[in-house]
Image 1: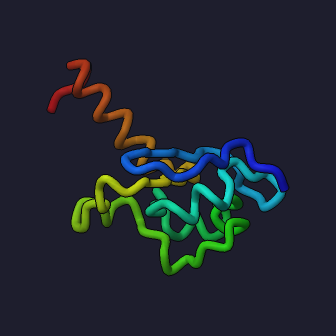
Image 2: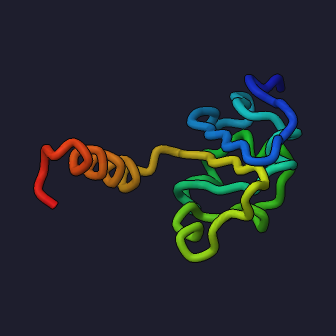
Length: 107
């Protein structure tokens, strides 16, 4: 399996993976994932749809839900890898935030 991106995890870097839901579709490589704090948008969906995390060998015990970052912020400046698996609730929240920022919906 060849990843699309597998640079060294650099301090202060945020890498966001949005594809590769199968083990044969690796987007982000094991080297970057191993050196990063790992977050997913959907903890339940990620177990079946985050092929790059599964292929990296990173234990799921090291993967945190994105919502937890509000309670326990990431350890900056350590690198962060965020894997999104298409959670519709997060998409809706992002759209509402963008609309509010643009002033197109009421607060």
